[in-house]
Image (tube, rainbow, N blue to C red; front, side, top):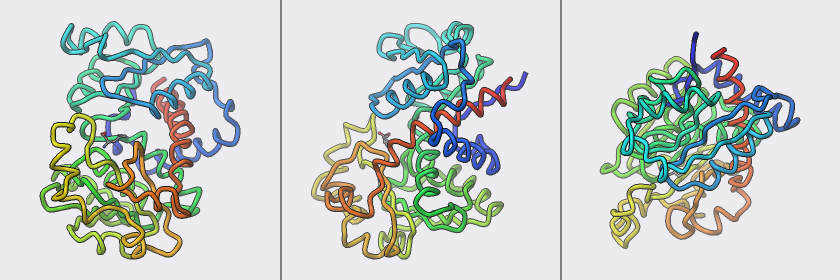
Length: 312
Ligand code: NVA
């Protein structure tokens, strides 16, 4: 039996990513068109970190697919502490049709996937946030008509999960991906190499620069994310204070002025107005963040449908 997971963005091929996005658009038009979880079959949705959008969109989405969303509090389950990840996987995997997990290290997710024969979905790790990127790409398709050949600039923390997922998922989508980030917060060399290889295959490109204006110049899409990711709260002072290395990368009206005149602005949320994004940008005419947040639902339903079918 083949089991398909989404642990990182490049677990999907370019063709599969496009197929998932097509299905997401169809499910947005007709929310109950697919019922792969009819029964209902359960999906375990496990959180080791805070959540709002991910819990909402996966619980709603699993229900709309005909299934039962079983939310598991990671603080109670204490996976890997109270018992091993492998033992948890052997127990959970016999009860549910898929596992959605937000956790810390990528190795934890991989270990879960290694010990189950149902799909495992990355609902954010320290390294990647691939579900968010499917929603972002759906949003870009809606507002720009297509992804291939478009330029996206992500500015901010270039070493975090969102930067890594923008590199991989947007390269797969045939985009020109630019990361504007200080020299002190570069993407992982491994992710960068994978993104460059994919961009070569999909007629896109990858650029990492410490010049925020060069990153954003002429871009069709400008994206950012918090400067203090979950788990980094201890560095909050350094990351957000007067001498923050990220300050020049804040998405202000001035920086956005260097992008294309009809650029759209993305933010995965939660947003911190006055830090990584100015209030008049996120609340202004270029912002499509509420479409982006809604699209988590449609994109994840399409992803689950795809993985369940591909695994059976
Ligand atoms: N980089 C952020 C994304 C939040 C959705 C974090 O990991 O907290």
